[in-house]
Length: 258
Image (cartoon, rainbow, N blue to C red; front, side, top):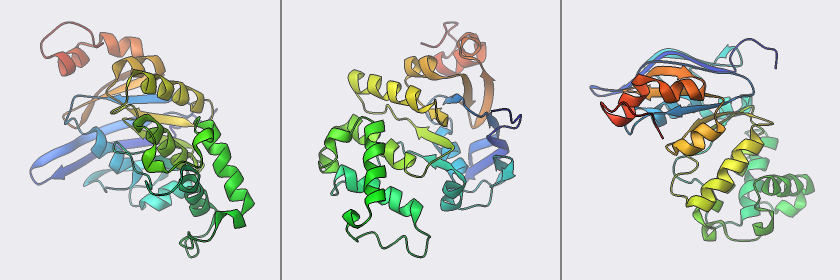
């Protein structure tokens, strides 16, 4: 896109819990059409930042902008309506429903106004459009053959893919992915990498991930969060060679991150 403004921007955002600052004047910009990876050691504040961006938490200081408008005080569902969706570090699905019904719920919540969106338990067969869209989303995340399976019986990697389908049901412009490879095996991780690469053709992605191999394969740009502050942002090659990044991950070692 030609819009010179970032799609998502945070300016000097701070969030503290008691005397501990989880975020400390963090500043970050995500541009249209990119996969922007956010990395950092455990406890750096990555998940707190995702909560702040999605509207789960409100910052103590600083501002959040989406598509040029300030959204700092908007609730999570208001940000979703603007096109900002997220997946969770811990899988967040309806385990007793079928895979298809999980996604159909997401589609239904988007297509109905908030006054009527809680009429979830009507048969989805009564609305062919919802079912067809849900099936198409499952095909996008390679779960089409598992539509009738109980979601709680999916393998862990399949549940992560289902969660991505739920986020896609909101038709996001920006997708926040919080450690989508967490708890997955090598084959599941590879499938998730392929899925994220495919999705990036259609939606901007902010990826929080510990799997450095996946990060350096996928990211157009990388930001490093340490102690609640963004200490570096740049192209993958520059971040790999940045001494501050090496210190954050490897103490005083001069080696580059994996």
